[in-house]
Amino acid sequence: KNEVEQSPQNLTAQEGEFITINCSYSVGISALHWLQQHPGGGIVSLFMLSSGKKKHGRLIATINIQEKHSSLHITASHPRDSAVYICAGTGGGADGLTFGKGTHLIIQP
Amino acid sequence: DGGITQSPKYLFRKEGQNVTLSCEQNLNHDAMYWYRQDPGQGLRLIYYSQIVNDFQKGDIAEGYSVSREKKESFPLTVTSAQKNPTAFYLCASSYIAEEDNEQFFGPGTRLTVL
Image 1 (cartoon, rainbow over the protein chains, first blue to last red):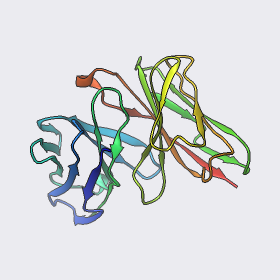
Image 2: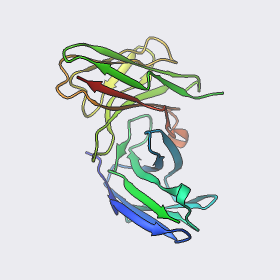
Image 3: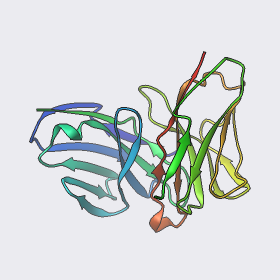
Image 4: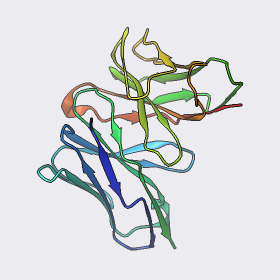
């Protein structure tokens, strides 16, 4: 069974700090998704990656296939980045995702 | 605008009643999914469908049923057999191609069973 472990569970930081959220996953997962969930529940897909690194604005996602590890980084963090960040893995194709429990991020002004 | 819609946003039902949650997408995606979210837990897969008139059970399918009569629609019925139905339900869709199967999520339906 696919498994995804995320850390930390909770993270509070000051505005401007560099943020890192980590995700480890089991054998059988070939692609990782990073998702953002705001209060109210709506989920936005940030990245999907199976190798290397992707960047979008202040967000950077990396994945190390050999170590089965992915990280989400936020540069120059801002209070509007406060949300729950979730990593989720898939074995490929159109199988459903296996989710981590999420990281609750709070950026204080 | 292309996207996924779920209705209603909030739903209240009495214990013992079946209830159907709606999910519609106009993204021309082949695959659709239903997930459940409980406080302190990750989302869990209930059912998914890769093609019309076909669907597969996920990790927690007991007490739920689905249908896929149209590509655009994937309604979820929470039956009276579901022991703890109060939760936040999310629908998602994606293409099937392995290089392009990013999932897009609906806004969710919060179901409360009284």
